[in-house]
Amino acid sequence: PVLFYNGTRYPNWKGNVLLGFMGHEELRRLTVNGTRVTDQEVLFKGLGRVRDFVLGPDGLLYIALANPGPQLSSTTPGRVVRLVPVP
Image (cartoon, rainbow, N blue to C red; front, side):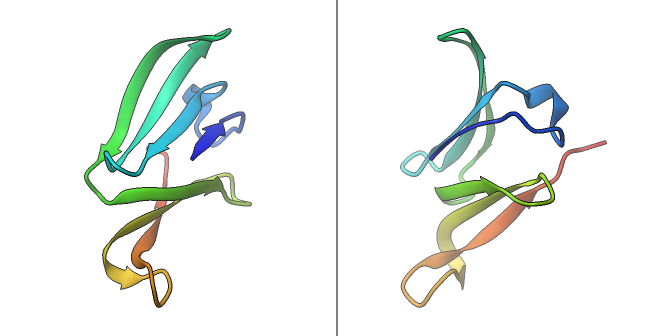
């Protein structure tokens, strides 16, 4: 999944791209300038396969992870996590 962030809850991320990797089990934030990636940060790695993520109505990022543990559905084990900015 890919998300172009233009919200206000994570002010330092405005104009950045969030990119999830199922195989690498990581979420990355890419800083872009025009059409070029100028920097990248691994936000987390190894918590589970990043299945999807969305911005909730509260402006926070919600991430669906496939991993052992609580069930997302009867066929997909995983969990949904909320990314809360540090003040």
